[in-house]
Length: 307
Image (tube, rainbow, N blue to C red; front, top):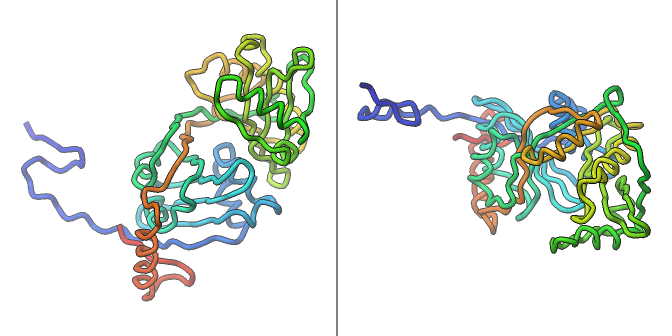
């Protein structure tokens, strides 16, 4: 019987040299070009589309890798709740761009499931979650009945108190609450459930709902769906596409979102990421070598990477 190893090479045979793959990595600064790349997968890319808003675009850096193994887009952004990394495209091309541009030392990463092994090469991942991305449109949205109140910057301390109920430290600021769309449900005067937004992009018609939390003593009463529905109803007026992410194992939450009209779009990975190259010297050397290597025949403004 012929044995084949993981790489597809027959066991015992001399390994054939693998042809090098070549990629051109360049920074993108034209919003129309970026938007066209993102709009191929709008539900997955909704957060990244939000970073094209005029107040957020200066806080973002976009990189495109194109070559033998396809194309990948990488976003590093800051602001809101912290640093974020977003990846879209082919895994091999993502390897090329991450070899040069790994971004801040720590960030919240969003990537496709097929990117996971690539991202692990460059980052330590914690709180790694395979998630279900769900979407709803104005045509499919079904609001719930009940009272939810709009939250404002002055309510940040109450949101933190609620989210700290199980010992997880939350540190929302008034600016973050005021800058997003947040709704809460109350038992008397006590805030017992909250939902908000990660991103709202009226310009590009996409919003990301998240930060959904219900106090343990009030779960099972539909309050998570109530506040999520209130946020969705607010943003769907300006954003025809609204998305959220949920752990597929949390079937109660999945069903609650389905009752609101959300439906499955894709699977993705979200995780806290910290660079393995803490000082950044390796990527600095790679950028230097790529720039020198690319001096002959590379497009202006790009660096040549061989894998």
